[in-house]
Length: 553
Image (cartoon, rainbow, N blue to C red):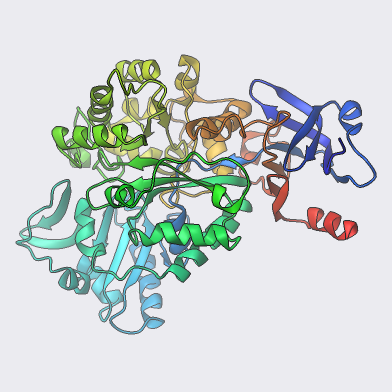
């Protein structure tokens, strides 16, 4: 059998359990052979295309196992308030004012990504401050975590929210001295968002494609949308299907339905959608509808993650917010478990993790045990030894975001103290205990840049250089394992991708340097030069694959 493509000239990371190879041969979208250059080259023929790594490294393509792809894509056209660029209130207001000048009066201005802990004022913007920047527009800006947002006065009026509006279940509307500040937390944000017109299908397909192209340029061949239905309801399902049918879906997608009562999981199930752990390369098989998500709590940076012990008094105290009381949360988990869905449940604080764990355990039955179902706890940041033991017993998968330590680690210290922060997101402990922790970004909450995530796993450094729990650092190989194989395993796909062994799908990334051998700081400036999905280049920085195709033509 003659290979379609042969890659040689540099190290090829096969997977944590398999080490490195000198060459890899691809046939019909799958790995034909991998090993030493001499033996693998035997699979090449006159028509075989060849790529010379020139000392670079190839590895399994990244799997973004917890992100919000549609929200990320739509957010590309919103006001960028991320802390990499925005560190002052004046800059927040300047960017909103600039957007207001380019937006017809009365239309919404949306912004995403501000971090009050990084702003010079050390707090959230106020409604009256947003009013000054855009007096003729409703404005709604979302904190980087996605669990807190601020509305201006025009947006409050459209939402019908006054100082007498009660807090909804699982949410909070901030008031100070009896006056609205504009701040909404958790489920209270729906009071404003539900007043916005949803995007059209065309706009969503454009956003899906734009997001996919950005991901491909970073080395991703698989991704996820972790809360399908919370922006445009059932229309989001149609938009993803349209993107796949039109060849505009670049990643293999793991789709997770919004399971909160305001979500679409019940409606989708009634309409006939069932868990479908897709395989293959056909357009419709790029979409796997596998799970349902329910929110247990909020974020530690936003002081809404639910803990047993309170936040530091200097940070505001309190123990966070449960999105649902125990009985309602446990009933939701039991229902979706019985329907056959994987449970992908958001829980960050130890109290929320306990609520979710108990709910999963109670959902188990002799007819439908939870063991083997690969239920997941998303984020799973601050947990204790007993919780880890119970998760391992039942095969419940932690799906953390190591990049949280990079972007939010210093804020965690401010909110929770150093001791609690150093043991958060315990990547090495999970691996040593036998868990399969899934590295991911939660983008657009954090940057989707995988090299920052890898750096965070290898160094445990925050963006300010603070080392937070050095004993939880990983080797580059372990970090790549968490970003590739663990993600595939969490999606029931480890037999198809996540390693580069014969028979596996040829989802491969070629990096600009050997990031397994370089200095940790150099990981941050590494780039993806080529990304293959099923042996087909979906990103080609230097035109290498394109040149081969042209030569073949």
